Length: 460
Image 1 (cartoon, rainbow, N blue to C red):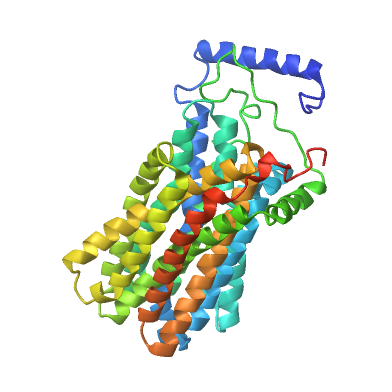
Image 2: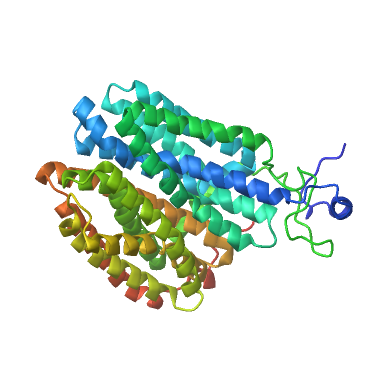
């Protein structure tokens, strides 16, 4: 039996592979395959896996009040667990592609879901604060990091030649869907029973996705003996995926960071995304429910408002992508951050036992603006570092996003414990957003690295 290798190294095997693709295409035309293309089943399972891994990370704020009541832990200690989780999540994400190529998509996904399920399941046994840091922060952080959007990008690139952008939009919305589906349910379970039942529910949901990764999920169309969705027999078929990266792959990923750090444009993109993470995942996602609870709003009501942010998040991301093709990306980012800062200055006065009319405006706007920063940031990574390096550079910029989220979560908890209110936390986040908007004004004057030297030696 012949071993498949890179088609670039073995032209003969490429010809054999093209004949196999043609044969598979003829089988499809004869009606021997299901009417629903296997690629859509793989995409559905991928979306479910992304939702499951995002669920526990996006619902941690709902556990703050019951943990405080049971263990008398302060908001700072609980926020530290979130900080660890978000930091690990962000740092693992740039290496996700290497993990996928070395161990296969299926193994990475199963491992990630097992880590999330283990962390959520063992959380019911915690008695010390460091147990929470280890489980919520460490295990769940590793699992969610391995299932970052890089995983979705790998699935879209391997399984789709048509509607690839649509599929990536589906995966991008999986995190928001996880928040939308799970958060109100988790809050309801906590109030109807206790927080341990809710934690076990998340663990069970993660485990239920694993059998679907055996079938209908598959690592590649070649493994499933089919072709990518939208591929025709006259097109160049993708190379069989049987590549195992060398030990230099991780070193190359780190090298790209070191070289990118030489350029001011990288720091502007990284630090503005750091502020984005601080003001979204770190502050609002983590502390909105406990902050609303401080003002007398029921947790179920606050979780419903946060879920609405998830709905408008999807709409805002799609609209931002459309605008990115028509407006200079740095202008969009400057506007996004400036408006976000102004909205944060109003939040303290909007919180109360009942929902004020202006709160609806805040929820709609913050949802539209939540990850609207992603499309223009990706576009700027491509402009300033070239298409070959844009993915890995965005991976590192995304790492800064999650580190900023962790820092914001911890800092907000500290401010609340020190002053008894989140007012200072809202103001600090607003000031950071204004600073991010101002820094983007200087971005057009900064040189583009790919015009001068590649970030990674292509011979490595």
